Length: 302
Image (cartoon, rainbow, N blue to C red; front, side, top):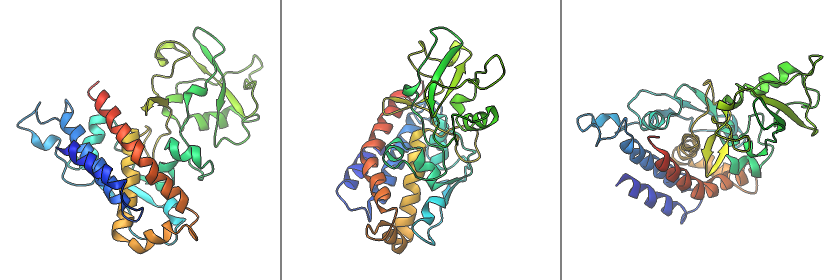
């Protein structure tokens, strides 16, 4: 029933304007979250009939300011995770293996992780973006595998970056942390053959799914593609992408519901520098969120 409600909410959101759309989108994703939690082998009602409270979250478990100093202030405004084991966000995070220790996460950092947004708007701000491991080019067919060219958005001057600078950049991405920075016999950083890229070494075949042409085990599935996501907030881990969308839609719904004047100002295409980004987020959600819900159901309990 919760999944049916989610479908109706998401379908309804496509028929209304941007002014109210975040409300339907958010309640659509939360109802889908109830369905996923109920279907979880660890939380599910059918598997623990006397422990209904395990999956039935009753609060949001989140906090977001409902006023803005300016439209641009939205990107620097943080949503705060307040897990208490009773809220819907915490229940779904547990079911999907997503971290709950991220604390405060700036809205701009969240949308930088969404491929549909970061591909369309390249310069969102200082936040690390998602990476596609499909761009990795391997120069060896057995371990240790050498990745010749990895794009490094946010790394200043990749062609001349020091080993410490490259390591700091790598550490933003949990899936890349086990990888090594290859050095020459003289102890210098081995440079990529492609300008603007770096080389890395995968020391162990266990870090890959099967063949070097496949992907890193720690990559996350996102709409049938393997993606490398940065760690979120104060957590050492990356959020499950469905939970990233949850936080984005929660933030927008709070602003639209409790501060409609600020929300309308942010949406004013004539004066707001972020209006087109907000419209793109809400348009993308119509396709992305149902896809991610379907994927989460397909891979739940694996």
